[in-house]
Amino acid sequence: MSRVHILHTNDLHSHFESMPSIHTLLHRLSEQLEGEGEKVFRVDLGDHMDRFSLETEGTLGRANRAVMDFTGYELVTLGNNELLTFSKKELHDLYEKAPFDVLALNVEEEDGQRPPWIKPWEIRDVDGFRIGFLGVTIPFPQFYELLGWQVSDPFEVLPRAVSHLRKEVHAVVILSHLGLGNDRRLAEVVPGIDVILGSHTHHLLEVPERVGNTLITGAGKFGGHVGHVMLDFDPVQHRVTAREARCLPVADVDPDPRLKARISLFRREAEEYLSEAIRELNHPLPVDWYAESPLGNFLADGLLQWVPDSDCALVNAGQLLGGLQAGPVTREHLHRICPHPINPVQLVLTGRQIRGILEDSLIRDRQEREIRGFGFRGKKLGMMNLAGMEAEVNPLKPPGQRLGRVQINGALLEKDRDYRVATIDMFTFGAGYGEFKKGREKKYFLPEFLRDVLAHHLRQSGAPERSFRPRWRDPG
Image (cartoon, rainbow, N blue to C red):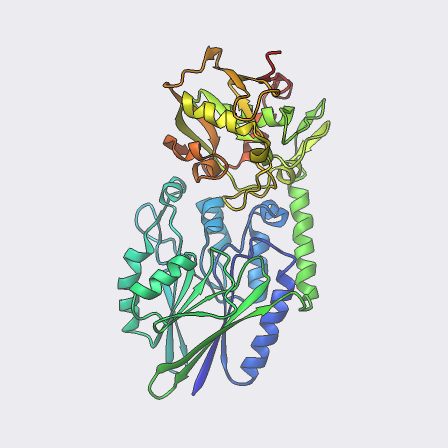
């Protein structure tokens, strides 16, 4: 019998502190196994990049690409963090001349063609034993279309692709950025898959799952583990005889000093790039998660200006992780206080829905709520900041009864009237306030993030001064 090894990482999300130790572990294992005459493939399953990281933001992903090159990845697929937070041109510049293969069966451009740097699959030969590696990523069609991508349903394209590939190979391995639930379903409904290397839902399967003849793996998140799949095959009959997998912890592995030094250089480059001053502030713009604040109002004002034809804007104070001091404001400052990959959106809400959101946002337990996922990189939800509207609030009344009169553009809020509201995409996914998810006629604005909205608004004359005008009022 002969053996093939697949070492895989996933969902690193630009945790550069883990990458030098991952490099050490991958190369130590590779040298040992290849020294024993066995073939090793190094694979990444997407979301290697995350623009919350200074190194990624300030180099537009070049720091990640350099790490991947140095680590010696051979096959990768794309995660939603790559596809949703970088433009097509930025991805083209990153991957066009990559020394590894980018596999994404269900990713095409608007015209139905793949860019030259994306392949649907790749076939590798190991002593006559042929393995087909095939990549798929999670579809978010309403977002991807705005960025010029067509990302099809993997359950529509995979059965035919796997069936076709099986005629040419002896084993099929899926690089999946679909999440564990979808991986389980794939194993059930698509015959002919030997291994699904999983990601997206950050699942750590220290013991792999088995569905029929398919092995399902997952190595967690943020570089805490490296996955290791072992495929035994009969070199005469060219068939898989055994499939095993494990996860190896990274925490106690010595970091590679050369990669640490390279990452430090990219951090300095990023800091220099992001040091560009956007505006000089004459006065600080503080933020408060639990009370109205100038910077919270400033962000709401910026959203109202950014999203055309909106009646008002609503955004939670927890999007802002700190205030801005008087003096020059740089892109690094904005990235530090607003690192989330969160985009503006416009939707239609009734006056009754708006009133419910405002009343709910005054409840302390709601403000204290911790949000995980949905692009949010903050801590607490915080109170609601307003633009284009004013609301009366009586803090002495019991929760749920504190909201008084609400005005939008000087007119009393009408419960049965429709209003176009500028807000943020994470609310439309159900995070924070359920009424936003019920909103109609959603229009997403990509690829810019909230920090881009802040930067744009900082350049507007008089904008900082206007943020000190109160929107929440105690009728006294």
